[in-house]
Amino acid sequence: MSLRRTLLVRKGASIAEDACVGEAVFIGRLSRLKIGSSSFIGKAEMMLHGQVAIGSCVCINDGVVILTASHDLRDPEWKQWVKPVTIEDYAWIATGATILPGVRIGRGAVVGASAVVSKDVPAFGLAVGNPAVVREDRRVHEFSYSPVRFLAFQEAWLGGTGGDRT
Image 1 (tube, rainbow, N blue to C red):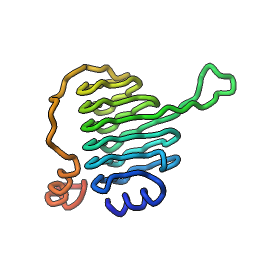
Image 2: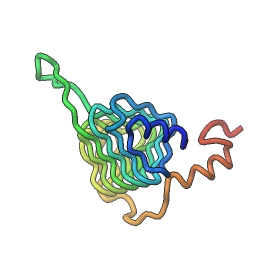
Image 3: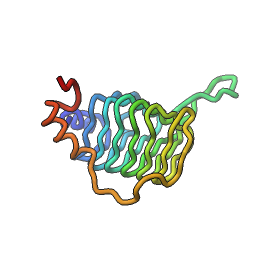
């Protein structure tokens, strides 16, 4: 994963040295991507038409899609519009979630599996469903974990960053 990080940085991304980037797919300019310290990105897909800012100690699981652009349905020319996505420290984006353009995921917030998020999620909130419904202040407010630290245990136990347990 550190080799992948190095290659992405060489192509313009800003990624903290201790962040782990798995088999994520990035479409657009890598210079629009910023990933903070001790964050983990799995097999996610990010459309970098606009900025994507990911804080520290963020966990983005496999199957997550982050979009930063769409089209204006009221425009006869169907013009594209762009809005940034921000994911603050200690947020967790669970498997298969979709984050739409212009969304801010607050500090310590959780986006549930397969949720489709079109509006901001406040700090410590929980967003679930399609469309996502936000339940505020559902999480502890003090954190002492690092998603990256869990990778060493997984690699030792499973022999890699995922895969078959048999």
